[in-house]
Image (cartoon, rainbow, N blue to C red; front, side):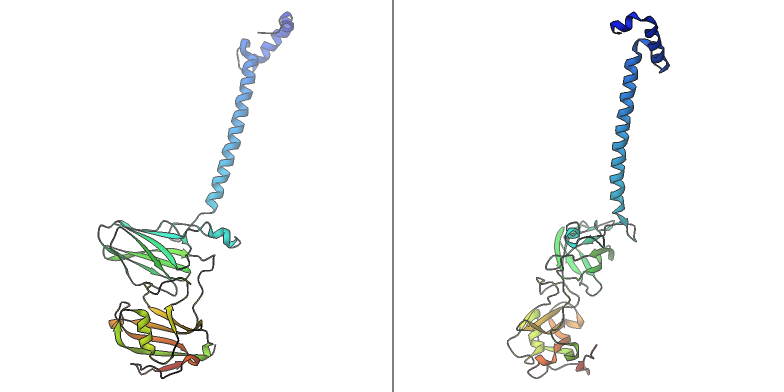
Length: 307
């Protein structure tokens, strides 16, 4: 075991064996065991460093997850974050799970597409159900879900939303934050100043119809002349004219200027066709070229006051 020089010096060999023995190992394996212990200590230190690194990453991840008011995990983008970078972290689709035990919405933040909020409804109830979406300035009518999976798009403006699902005859709701880092949504406005805007109340639609654009034209009559275009309200540039809104409304334009918004209703104020009345028509006075349509209420025309 020992080299030639060490074997000839019995005193030196004895001293080395006593040194190894004092370290807690038998003399004949003393030096090898000392080296082994040093190797184990180095291995443990390396393991401790690796563990500390993993814990640091885990702690950082936890710092990005904040429990919301209802105890669900809520992920929010930093106020100083680059919008383009933040948009990559927020999903484009919100899943709504209607289950016998309750509604489940697995995310807290979502971003819209060019036509509005996209939802995928999973119906696990074994029977048809309904869902609703409500924002600060927009609300949907109850939307029928008769299949196990249904994709729904609604033009709700960004902000704090509640998403509901009808379970056992009652709507259960969850909060979802709709963020718009791409700026897809623009608040719809008439092209004229507020001082030039007029509101007509309860305008009769002469012939009931199930087509929004036709209903708006019938309500306006010849008051705006031609040519005019009747389309979906352009909050989102690509939103559909049939949009599940509790307040069905269309946009009227001429030469790309928005000159009127026409809100329509069905029988007894229903948001479902056939359309029989326009409870509110917002119009630019300068766009009126013909006789105003007949209204069914005592309030005929109100001119907005300057702001």
